[in-house]
Image 1 (tube, rainbow, N blue to C red):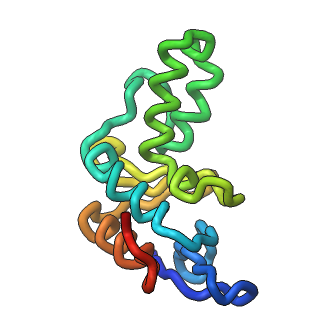
Image 2 (tube, helix red, strand yellow; image 1 turned 45 degrees about the vertical axis):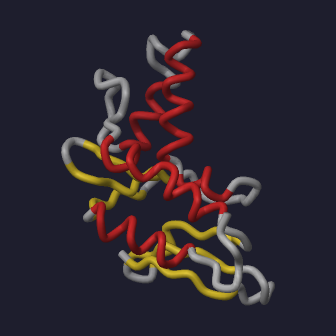
Length: 146
């Protein structure tokens, strides 16, 4: 799995954040500020330590469990909807790039390992390496961090 950021081909002041596996594009999003980096820093502990909150939901990945939640017995109960929404906020990479159209990808702990998970995307990874790479690649040179 490769993680990179590069200048956008179409917009010189905008960066593109890319996750690929053997030249297959898994995730791509444009950004021009520190919001994605701040999202990673704010959610790092949840990503590293937070298990999926409803253990009895079936699924072979984080993405599948979230999808299956919406057809489970919990889907009509506000308290459970709130729990899943909070999980999605802190584990959904697409929330790091608010306002940008990108794939729904989750990062987090799953069955004792760490997983990058989306539709047709299920990769296990070393959490420390991934978080460090994200931070390095999401840093926008020349912009002040607040």
